[in-house]
Length: 263
Ligand SMILES: [Zn+2]
Ligand SMILES: [Zn+2]
Image (cartoon, rainbow, N blue to C red; front, top):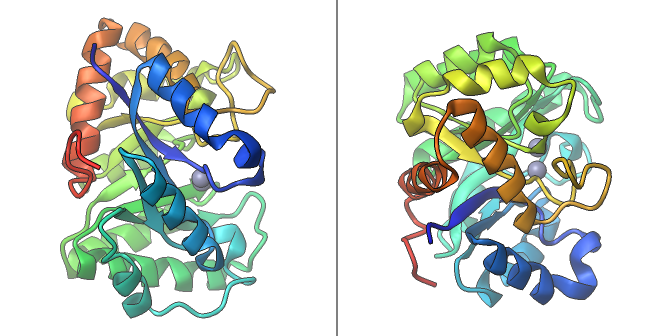
C-alpha cells in the first residue's frame, strides 16, 4: 500500500493533548505515513520538536504564524536557521500574510515574512507559506526573495485565486490542498485543483482545523487526509493509489530532509 503524507498539521495544539499516541496510530492505520507538524510560535518550538522526536516519520518546522507576529519576540533569520539545524526540522514556517483576520498589523507581518524567506534561502529548506486575502503582497515578497537567492516552498491550505496559484507555480512552489476542497462551496478551488501539475501537488489536513467532508465541523486529525486525497484523485481522474504515490513523492522531494522511511 502507498502511504499518503500529511504535509501540514498541528500536533502540538491542545486538541491533541490527551491522545496523541492514538491520533498518530490512527493515521498509520488509515494509510498516512509522513506527518509534518507545523510550528506557529517560537515559544512553542520546544514542544513541537519533542513531538517530532517522539515518533518515527513525524517531522516538524520552525517559524512564526502571521497571526502571532506581534505576540512573539524578535526572531532574526539567523535564529531560525540555527533552530532549523535540528535533524527533524524540514521546513521554515508557517509564515506569510493573513489580511482576513489581520491579528497583526500588515507591515509587521511583512517584515517577519521577509525574515523567514531569508532563513529559507540561507538554510536551503523549503518555506511553508500561509496566505489569506493577501495574494498580491504574498507573491511580491516571494518573487523578490526568489530573485535574490534560491527559494522553494509550498502555499499551504491553498484557498486563494488562480492568480496566486499560477504565479506561485511559476516560481516552482508547490500547492497543498486541505479539506476546504471537499466543501460544497469550493467550486473555484476545485477548478484550480484540477490544473496543478502532478509534480507540484501536496495534500494536508491543517488539523485540528478544517476537517474534510464527511467529518466537516468536527476536530480534524491526520487520518482524515484520506478523504481530501480521495476527492482530489477523483477531480483529477486518477486512482487514489496513483495520487498517494505522486503526492508522497512530492513531499519527499520538497521536504528532502525527511528521508523516506527513516526516523
Ligand atoms: Zn496556515
Ligand atoms: Zn497551519
